[in-house]
Image (tube, rainbow, N blue to C red; front, side, top):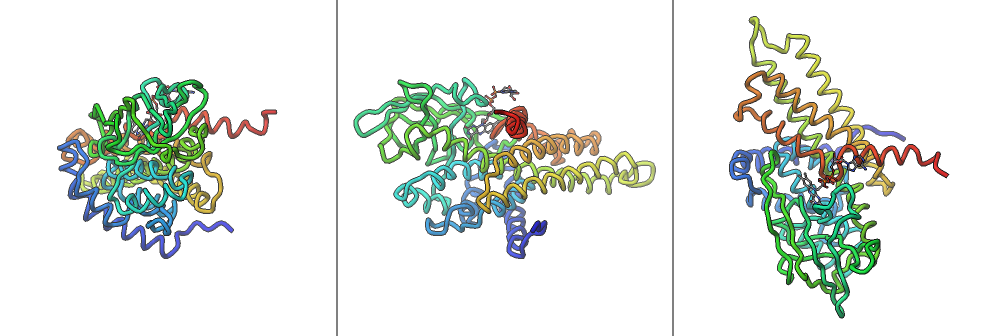
Length: 382
Ligand SMILES: Cc1cc2nc3c(=O)[nH]c(=O)nc-3n(C[C@H](O)[C@H](O)[C@H](O)COP(=O)(O)OP(=O)(O)OC[C@H]3O[C@@H](n4cnc5c(N)ncnc54)[C@H](O)[C@@H]3O)c2cc1C
């Protein structure tokens, strides 16, 4: 049976997430924008509100609420701060490989501290040699007794300077076709964050480079099977990474529509609010259409994920649609504001900058189309 309604618990959770976002995150946004940094108090509040525990199973200290709940939380947080939602989304992507592929010992060691927000996480796949083409990454590993030695550099890593636990993809020094995933921890010999990026948008989250210089990783930190690293990374990115970007995009779209509605009803031209102009009404209607359609795509994929169904193709569709729509919606919101849209005191200027940053993470729109085309063409390939 198809049911397009949220459960009573999910509605209550959305209400709580909205209240959290509006009271704990929104007041810190100006400070985050000004400093161009993650706000420690916001991170602490996320932990206390158990936002880091949503997808972690209860037996490892989490709430086990699943991926629809995660999408609700990300949408509500992104509605006030896309940067904070992005920080939380990549945290979720960083822990997913441990939840899915970690052994019992690794789950017991890492997940409880991550669930409490005492430890932060990220995932490090991208390198300068190509994000869309992860096989061209050069970060390598080799066996050294009971340990592995990792060498290389990862770029564009969200939470690079605040993460304690990093899922890293590296290739066998002797066989460039063999990839393995490792859990690298802050403080391990030879591992350090390096350059920090200054992005045009999402200024309140941290993006930077991670360096592995003869980084010694014990055998117990091997994640999943040796040689199956690409599967570990791609399974997490395909569903949790793309799903998280859908949450960031939906929240931004909602914020753009709300700000535009407010402005269009306050701005008087020709003696009446501009919401009386049909051109403005058309823009508002288009924003609402995109938001409704994006929500259907995103929450359907998340519901499939909660039911244990494979949902990476559906998330590729949702990620493409919602991030493109958020970029279009942010531009429309700026246009509705006329000259005021160019002023920093109006939030739509931030939404516009933030919308630019939504595209590449967890795969560009071009890559989403490559995935979707592969999916639709599959029955025709012998
Ligand atoms: C804010 C932000 C946060 C990020 N966080 C993380 C993170 O935490 N961890 C992590 O590992 N990575 C992260 N990334 C990296 C992100 O995954 C990459 O930016 C993305 O995969 C694109 O890679 P690239 O930037 O190297 O672009 P490239 O791969 O160099 O792409 C350049 C252009 O070529 C196009 N292109 C590439 N291949 C194809 C193709 N086959 N067909 C058609 N067009 C193609 C692309 O669409 C794009 O237009 C983040 C990026 C950003 C911007």
